[in-house]
Length: 219
Image (cartoon, rainbow, N blue to C red; front, top):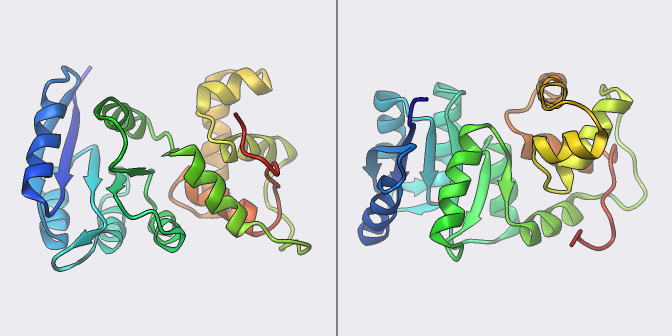
């Protein structure tokens, strides 16, 4: 199996170099490039065609969110994972709208970042549980319901499981279906909602009132 091609972009050169060094120790990951600005991120993604881009938010020439949106527009198959110290809810929402696959804090361990790269390469949404819970509670409406959902009851069940931070395999076990069936449902959900990622689909479902989340985050 081909190695996962990764582009690392962070304006702190020491952090960028250290992260690239860590990733290069993994046999299934290849670091194809590094950058430190929004423009470098966009240009490198276009030229190198990475599978995954690890991207900071705050850079000298603008926002990593802008870079993420441009990367996804030019190369939708590239998965973008935000890796930042910024945990503001508004920034997280903007990142999701830009189509990112994951959003991680720089406080995560090296092992968690490596796992995030692998998950992103599979198209799995990845976000720290406490950040996901905070985001979704901010989106959840009190008493309103949005327009009628275009999703089937089974697709809504899958979307509800995704809102709890579960990956495809976990959803398959919980709903007693095959991983391939879950994958098909996820693809249908993204297509029907016209969104780029699972995170964006979940935020849309919560915002429109199609799914609800527990009052307390799952353990």
